[in-house]
Amino acid sequence: MHDTKERLSLLWIFALLNYLYADVVALFAIVGSPNLAEAPHLPPWALLGSAVLMEIPIAMIVACRLLPFRANRLANVIAGAILTLVNGFLTFVPPLVGARTPALPEYLFFATIETVCTSVIVWKAWTWSGLEAAVTPEGIVRQREAGISSS
Image 1: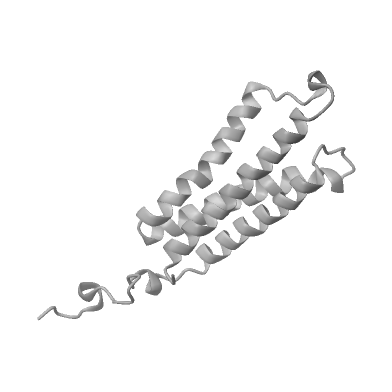
Image 2: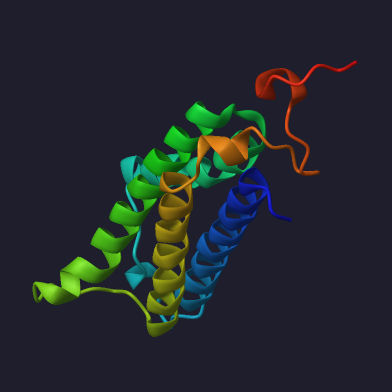
């Protein structure tokens, strides 16, 4: 698997699974708490924001495979940067400025993996060359674009 489209799609799947499992672990902690009334309750706007943020990696899995090179590269850089910044800001900035954070150690573990993964996505998309995009996964240059006749 040397196609950047495939690698980016696989990285988005990896990031998404980490996001989802981190949320599952957090839900286990909430459900297992002695007093559910004291468990954190998110307002509807926060739940909507979470839904929008999770839709980004879901959509990027498909977009990586379908978009042409320029749009694909731009979408990966933008989506990866947004998720890296949001995840990094929400997870790592509050403790640095002395704010209390409800983040569990296992959530910090997942957040670190997620942030590294989306940073790698941004880097791979940023350094993705148009020359590689002209080559198919089988390694055959598109004949018409390369100026090669089919006869």
